[in-house]
Length: 273
Length: 237
Image (tube, rainbow over all chains, first blue to last red):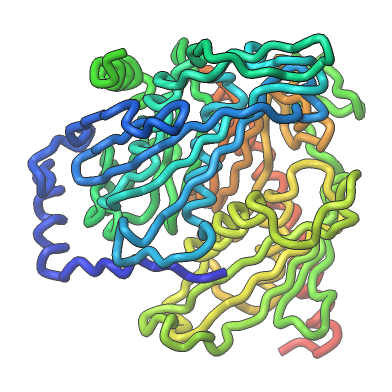
């Protein structure tokens, strides 16, 4: 129930300057309205994790670790692996973050990322079955924000995708006693669908892509679109205080669909597997 | 398309029967009960009242806080009464919806607390909650820019449908809750879980907006009859 307004306060004079720039079609960091900040991806940096990736989106840094271990399947999907997505906003990332269990923003972030992975089957969950109905691999995705400078969702999405692409887990065999034994042999996690998270925000009547923290603090609301392979919309989340008109929605959806390929290529180029 | 019938006999664009009652809880400043099919929701509004803790209050405007909660008996398998991650996310979204729709600069330094209890869940609980809260806020006499009406749309067995039941939601390929301020066509809540093409998304949005208009009419009528009741009781002013 805590009310987390941005403690980042953008001075009125700077706000006015940013508004004036927007009216001229410009942003403070010289980007176009639909331009992403530069991204940098480092994969496999956590040796103990089955997969990991650190993503820099401008000054936003998100580290994602993937752990895989043997677990029980969900009762309604006995022959599929499980997925749990969690995210934390540790106090290292921002003066606004406090220690403690994930707050509503961290929970929302994890649930948005989850949405792009679960129903669109980004991972081949069937390949994670060991003994149907008894033992499967569980995939734990843990998202850690290391530096908060806006647009955590897109950065978390990229780092999750990069970490999954980089994930290798130990092969399991079932012995004569029916027990699961893990071998030394490593298998690559089968990522079969690449969800791309694209977040647009609204300041005045302008729609901006990939807002930084200052812009976020000034924005009314955001819409995250999740686009999957084949040009399908596989998730949406509107958040923040404000509204979108039907025209704005249509613009954002069309824009996301047209941006999907280029953003995906950009990520894959940087992942270099 | 019009030949298509759903498991409960509804047409693809038909919403379940609606029922609502306004002002049913005496202790709350505003309250409402809202029912859509077997989804039954109770909402209470307290405030505008003093904000606690005080240092978090805003000098410019009142702040809406919301708690969406499902009762342990509202679902088939007993649910733990503590707030789940899902409930925390929905509470956040509902809070944001009403922070958008209330003219909050009328009551600076205050809190408007919105409490929602889902009594029985059969799909579309978050949109039913939003419909209930809107009625409760009007009952509390709080200034809204417009009523908020909400509905869920989705894709079940390849068919685009309006107002998903719990069973439909379970097997659905996509589920999209929408909330709007209908008179100005402003979207205040939009979520999607599942895959849709651009064309499907647009038809669902259109179907949703039609259903929302029906719910809007229903809410207005409901509030009108409540007002008539009050006027009868207190006499014409």
